[in-house]
Image (cartoon, one colour):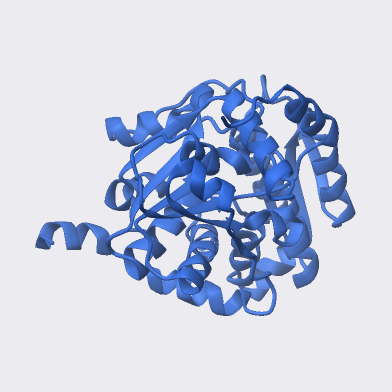
Length: 334
């Protein structure tokens, strides 16, 4: 590796040491989620696939990892002031539960059209919710105003070094469980999970090729990585509400440039098919955004025949009416 590339990687906001430190903080707190396999999936994809199932994580998504790690890293004075976050659901729940466990007040800025079950769960975990209009208001501006008024720390869903480090522990656990991989596919919204997992892959399985996967209706990460600049898009029209981000983070892009091969996309119909496969064949409930990486693998977005493939299944928080409609309308793998 060239000296200039090594220097560039050293300057990134998050290192593998940060992920290892996060893993220690999360030990006995976050669940070590199962790694599932499926003979049907292996046969269809012509590969050995290992699904890291974060739908079994606390709050039903990987977001708890980054949330708990980030709040844990605050000073005692900061914890007393509380935290504010903005999220369509999973980061909201992660922050709410982590804050409750650590005795910190949490305020969450959530879109008024967020899934009802995610709003309800966030309230049940004890957070204060501030609703906003996703189409007309800027959640980051609202969070910044609340931070200025209350003195609380802002913990964004992905553009935060301690959040990224926490999310990377999911891939660390996968590699610890199954060893080196040829490929790793990661669900992508704002890019925090992808960033952390890519760093873990580079350290624990250096020959592993990492791909992010996002909805084709909202391919801001793909555009950003390929252009080298952060691309902003309108709110994506996709069933993958957990990936309706409009841009990736400033800390995220350099990490993706250093460690990620490319960003792939899948359609909503492909997500529906993957939801049905998970339910019928593997007996698990996975939300649309949680199916992104698996859908790319099962629809063979790239050639990887005979490879050892890791898939991060990012979450399982889905409204049951949406789940029922999606599964009923889904095609099946032939």
